[in-house]
Image (cartoon, rainbow, N blue to C red; front, top):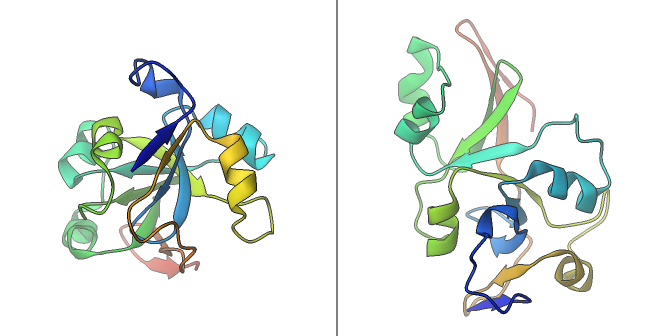
Length: 157
């Protein structure tokens, strides 16, 4: 089910903030990271995770992966990677809605206030579109966070 404040049929979806259940937890999604920074009250210089629907899409966005890490990234699930100070995830699972697949790539962050748990009322006030299925919105564990380079990998979360 998709609920929207807008009367038009998502004509300018690139500037909207979406609340949705991702493959890991409830999150805000948008192609405009400045709107996400405003919602989360965090400096716009602090980077957000960029979600891609495939490895090819990530590479087409002028990104590179160390040769010895390509296979590891391709097989990983529910994992966020940091390579050269850029955080990204590949979300191949079909749990997201068609709107998010069409929006890809997009920036994402957890749907909560800083240092607080998920609060539905707060999230509904801050989003333009809410995407929810029959299971509702669930705050689950966040993705693993790994920092990679060609020599080592460091688990951050």
